[in-house]
Image (cartoon, rainbow, N blue to C red; front, side, top):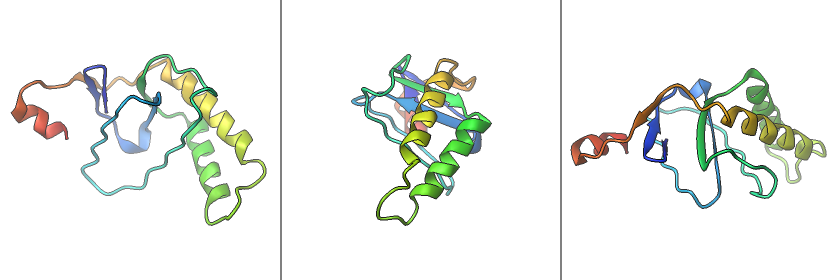
Length: 117
């Protein structure tokens, strides 16, 4: 995930990311996997930077699973889903303060940059 001229490499099962609206992000996943996304109104949460990649906490992982469970296959989401999404957003903002350790500079040569996309 490029962020400010840098890229992060992280195992999918251990990574989370938070980004501000209007900032493009490219995600490359070389193998098939199941992922989850939660989109929030930008006015709800204040991120410390345009994009952060972080290690997902057990709490955040459980909140993602529960939000997915409560919204799967329903015409209307469960009544407590907004509160769970708010808790997930707060957890992600707290985690975004400590970006992940696997951050590298984005390559500038065409040959190397092609491998990132």
